[in-house]
Image (cartoon, rainbow over all chains, first blue to last red; front, side, top):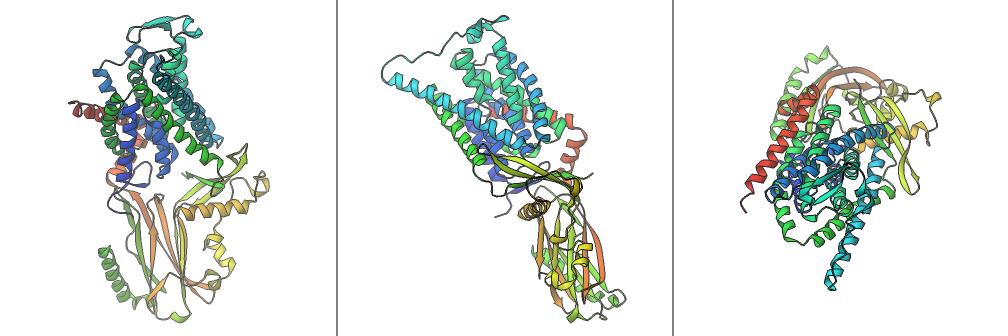
Amino acid sequence: MRGQMDIYLPIAEVSVNLLVVLAIGGAVGFVSGMFGVGGGFLITPLLIFIGVPPAVAVATGANEIVASSMSGIMAHWRRRTVDIKMGLVLSAAGILGSGAGVLIFRWLQSAGQIDIAIGLSYVVLLGSVGALMLRESIRTILATRSGQAPPIGQRHQWFHGLPLKMRFPRSRLYTSVLPIIGLGFCVGILSAIMGVGGGFILVPALIYLIGMPTSVVVGTGLLQVLIVSAATTIFQAWANQTVDIMLALLMLFGAVVGAQYGARVGVKLPGEQLRAMMGILVLGVAIRIAYGLVVAPEDIYSLSTGVLK
Amino acid sequence: MSARWLGGLVMCLIVAAASPRANAQALVTDLSDYHVAITSSFTGTQLLLFGAFGRNIDPTNTDLIVVVRGPPQKITMRRRAREFGVWVNADKIEFASAPGYYQVASTKNLDGLASNQLLARNQIGLRYLKLDPVTPEVALAPAGAPLDEYRAALIRSKIRDGLYREDIGSVTFVSPSLFRQTIYIPANVPIGDYRVEVYLVSDGDIVSAQSSPLFIGKTGSEREISLFAHRWPLAFGLIAIVLALIAGFAAGEIFRKE
């Protein structure tokens, strides 16, 4: 029932329920604080689900991620679990990637395939990342239970030996920056296309590919998410005017509170269990979106509007 | 809501009092509001249209049609097809101009009121909306389905969003020469200039017609935010970020004590 709790959003130009927006913010914030991801992979689908236009959902999500990752990173900052040097290298590459991603986004939009492209990239990426995380964590949990030492991830891979070596004292790494730049760039592209911060890809990649210690991965990932989503917000507001500040602030309210509780739960849980839960959540979102792509739509026609000037 | 109805009643009386003078003029109408202001609490609204016609018109042989038209939009209709198990957008047709909002209401079934030609000429009824593709029909590339199916899909989609509606038989007579119709404005209504048209129909012909403007726009903070976002987009983006950083920082500090 429409009532007092409905609020009209100035940019999205739709009316939404205040409590629903606060709840979305709170849930996303909780996830973000717990797993050290921005939570964008939840925001975009949820906002579209409540009727916010996709372009506004993607851009506003980026704005909201800035706030939740800011409050999330502060706890890590105090615990000194942020590798600033690594975070800045990742962010610089991420901003470039985000710029490239926006160009791809526009090209797909003009081809009329953006919604399918978003859906497919969600399914492929979330599906594979979720499955990998779940498999790894279950294997480790089982190994620990049977009394064996957990298998150590491949600490050294061929690409660590590439030129341009750099020392990352906080992560206790001495490695080539090229794979780190490559990773940051790819995550930047995805963040622009999918409207996500990219933490759900970054965190496992930093652990399994770069070989960073798990303790600093979450905080460092948040730093990159913070900077790249800030860049995305500015770019979207500038180019498309699709950032709904009212919607972002409302979600924020729920998100910053949720993030604090999420962070507390996250600290208490063992890393492997945390990763298994995150894997299940990511996989769940992927399956839900895959279902939407495969099942016959209610109406095979869809309408998009351009206002006549 | 009760205040609105009271206002409507007062207006109804005014229109009724004015009706002797309506002898000279066949049709007099008034709208409960000529300006719909969209504020943060806007969840859609209803307007009341009142009207009266002169005594020289026989009410038993008279019908009314009310048409509300919103600002024109360019609309792209896409058609999905299954490819490799996934539903992708396969074809599209762009329509040059369709009303962003359209409501038609009448006292009777439209077909019984006037000829098809008359309805089509005035675009009265969803069936008679002029929806022309940007590319002329003869030059249109095959789009997997005929143009008419795309047209039907456009109207279907707009009806689903509450932006097109046909309220046949809903124009009600308050007295023999006084009538009333509700105009439904949903929350997702496009902003801009609207027209409210009232047609007096007798013996299959339009005897008299009235057209009044209606403006739907954002006001207050909604208007300021939206204007700012479009005029100074870069500054808007920077403000959005600064606000987000402050809010995040504040929350981090508030929850610091553990």
